[in-house]
Image 1 (cartoon, rainbow, N blue to C red):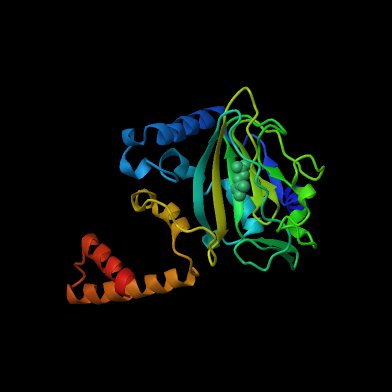
Image 2: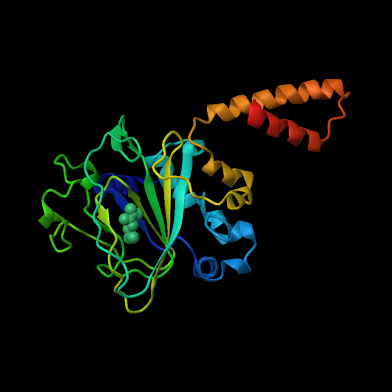
Amino acid sequence: MNQRDRIIFDLKGYIIKPAVLSASEVKELKEFVLRQKNEPESLPPHQRSLPGGTFERLIDHPEVMDVLQDVIDSNVDKIRLESTFLSYREKGEGEWSPHAGGRTTNPNYAYNFYDGRMYAGMTRVVWELEEVLEGKGGTCFVPGSHKANYNIRNGSVPSLDSKDSGIWESYSCPPGSLVIFSEAVRHSADFWQNPNNPRVAIFCAYNHINVRHHKPTFAPEVIEGLTPEHQRFFNEVYHPQFDRWERQQQQKYIKVANKLLGNKIDSGLKTKIKSIVKRFG
Ligand SMILES: O=C(O)CCC(=O)C(=O)O
């Protein structure tokens, strides 16, 4: 993350990165997620919902990881992906629903600044696949509200939550842009009013490996269909040190099996040992 983006994210609680994806990447991705939405049966089971299929390669897109390493954890292994969904809105669809905002001790989405760097919990990464026009339905924010000292979370001054209170802002961006925000910033969905195109956006919620906000709902066959590098974003909530211990245990058992079989252990047996250690180790 460059210093300008760091300062903006800390100051406002969100940043926009315009046109991260090329026009052809946007086209391919949009066609795929609309197929997932409209004709899932036409796809193999492991691609019928997010994060499966064309979206998979965006899980650890370098532009996303670059930001998350600055706001969640510098170690990519400590970043999880806990929710992904498609937001599709035609003109007139949507809602005004302000939520979050203010300082919180809730580790799921607390925002802190300590020792020269940001520490955000749940961080939303939104891929906008259609053009967004300011004030016409993109996500709205009260900039800086992730650090508010008065309690704005419970909506105790309702006039502040009205869209025309003067404290809300939104954005314009071309298709393929990224909107990244701390869940701690007060924000709201809006009614889609862009006459030119629907809203087609993929919402992702990343978090630190040690906490989770959402109840997991991913289809097991979709997660099993991902590459191992991507599967690990959906591991249960635990510290990655346990993966190291598990690998050490597996190696121990594989060594013993090698000794017993005179170094003839094949890859099928190795996989079996690994899964047994994983289940019972
Ligand atoms: O639909 C939107 O634009 C905002 C969604 C939202 O409120 C959230 O991600 O928490």
